[in-house]
Image (tube, rainbow, N blue to C red; front, side, top):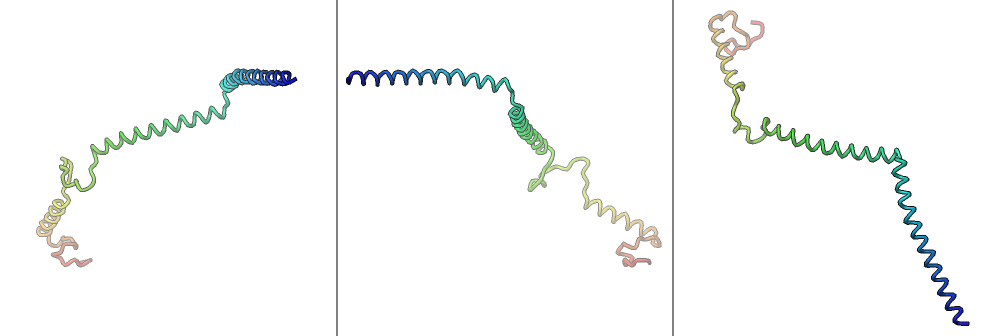
Length: 131
């Protein structure tokens, strides 16, 4: 009698292992089918999400490259800061102080030539408006 129970218990375990083995095999065959179905369906929402992330990534890369290019060109052409006194003046630059002195000298010479037409803003006329 004990032998019968032991054999029955062993047979049940063998059946259970075979059943588990069959379930594993089915799961292995079903999972690739599901993956294939997902690829075949081409879910439009997932596709749009992937495209959006790809576009955002491209914009980030483009922005970084554009920023590097702009910074490089700006460093070549623009100078700002405490090194301004080291920059050589180009051929088209103006000396504002010298222009102001030249203009004052020119006005004084014109005022000496024609005293009745002297502008009112010259210090020599007193600066009165309407005289």
